[in-house]
Length: 102
Image (cartoon, rainbow, N blue to C red; front, side, top):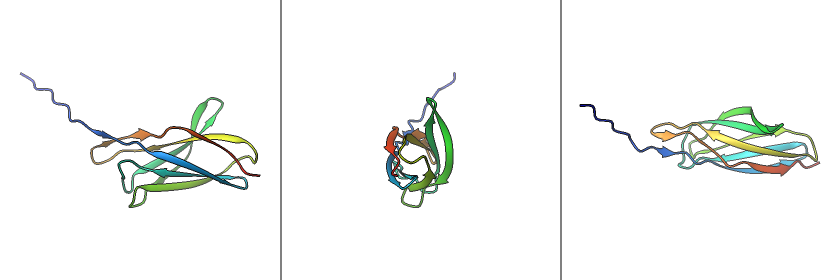
């Protein structure tokens, strides 16, 4: 007969922290578990849907950040996706909002 075996995978649970300076937002991403050189995709909510606005990679400590120019005084919602590797499944952060500093 056939034996179906599923390997329990660890799932990535990235967290994000947002900071703003005049007209910009920086999205800081931390991968959990820490993955080095993993692909990070950045998203902003636009008309109710998340749109990809950038791609980067985590450093050797599992962190990444990218800065985006956004409308001053407006509120934006961001999230990030860290693509899994080495037995770790891809995960998406919770979304967070920030008002862009003028």
